[in-house]
Image 1 (spheres, one colour):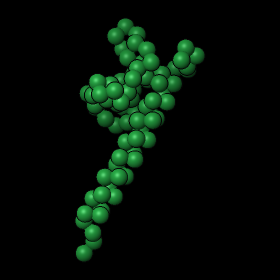
Image 2 (tube, one colour):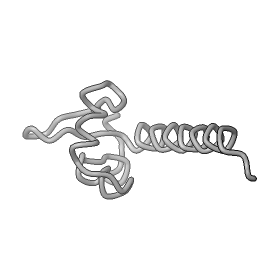
Image 3 (cartoon, one colour):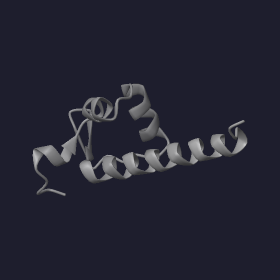
Image 4 (cartoon, helix red, strand yellow):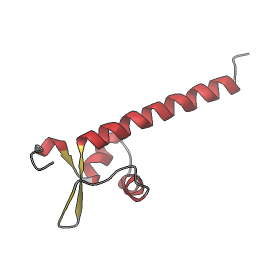
Length: 77
């Protein structure tokens, strides 16, 4: 992990902006273990882009599943 470029290292604020969520959501993901920091610099947690992309994929899959479930429960007339 020492050889990661700056674009591969993200702060909570950067993740929030990139995913369109509030920073408290990113903190919640940290608190629940969905995001694990690779480093901490002066109290700022640093996350890998890989872990953020994994979370993005998981969120997309969960959204698709929720939409499919809703569609099954609410068939067109």
